[in-house]
Amino acid sequence: MSSTEVSNSIKVIKLEGNYLIEQEQVKVLQKVEGFINDGFSKFILDLSSLNHINSAGLSVLIRVLTKSRTAGGDTVLINIPKNILQLLIITKLNSVFTSYEDVSNAKDALSNS
Image 1 (cartoon, rainbow, N blue to C red):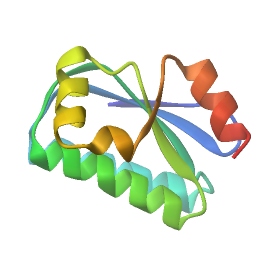
Image 2: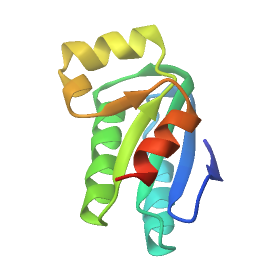
Image 3: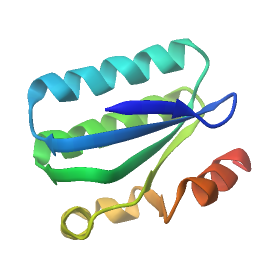
């Protein structure tokens, strides 16, 4: 997992590998909580390097979304691999998350919200 700042309130978090390990899930949530404490409330989750995700991983995505909205922001997804998009559709989470093709479009949308 890596992160970059794209504005004073927006962070891009790139999830990588197989998002199945509990240790990775805890790490993401701790990072997000730290970012929120630092004044960030809007997150762009870049899934381009994410190979697999299970129900616990989906739960983490939902928890990040909930934390950001509680802080007055939002969370969007970008670069969703086909297999993960299919899972989001099956679980109907595609109607919960807004997704964009790239960082630029996501940043513009979050900046206007």
